Amino acid sequence: MSKRIFHKRQLFCRLGEEVLSLVFPGRCPVCDEVLSVGQQICSSCRPFMLRAREPVCMRCGKPLESEREEYCMDCAAGTHLFRQGRAVFLYGGQIRGSLYRFKYHGRREYARYYAGVAADVWGQWMKSRGIEAIVPIPMYGPKQRVRGYNQAKVFAQALGLTIEIPVIDLVRRVRDTVPQKELDYKERKHNLKNAFQLQTDIVKYRRVLLADDIYTTGSTMDAVAEVLLRAGVVDVYFICISIGEGA
Ligand SMILES: [Zn+2]
Ligand SMILES: [Zn+2]
Image 1 (tube, protein in one colour):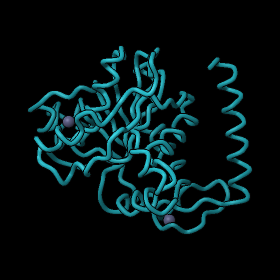
Image 2: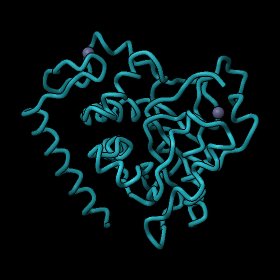
Image 3: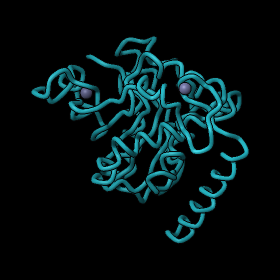
Image 4: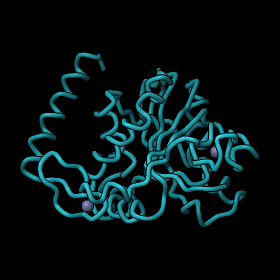
């Protein structure tokens, strides 16, 4: 896609979004109350969305207790296939309910707020990495048909509009997988084995940013990164809406 067409399409999307937000005002991602035009979160709810700020693990972006540490325990112990990742909010408290509604109750509009904060906190980081495309972590087709949308893609699209980077479905999920948190380390690896495949024959991007809603162990990011690295991508980064603290 040429740059010109991309920008035109973006402009169109923006206008469309603005018109839509006048007709259908958004809802607060914390209390779910209807917001007034132009608002993305109630001012009283804002303090409840805790941002994942520095100091964070140099690799996965998990918050660290002290500036002296460089990596979290998990990243210090093993190697990930992605180069680096960052998260927007700390998982827990209000973000839990917010993400639940975003994922299971059709509250796609929350993505605008998540993406806005992502650009605010990590915009410079994303820019400095020379990212050429945002790739959503894919959902298994039949599962997505039931839910109606892939929340990772909804977030990726909102972020793409905000930071003006195209969103490309480079990878598809060809197997359904059990939620990673229910498995131990060995089972996790096996669970994701051959779960992802390249969507296109040729990948022209060298630096891509994966987008997902929650980062837990990083094994999903690694599994998708593996497919992309094999296809010639040089650096795989990620951004997720939320991340847990500790280990
Ligand atoms: Zn609120
Ligand atoms: Zn880490």
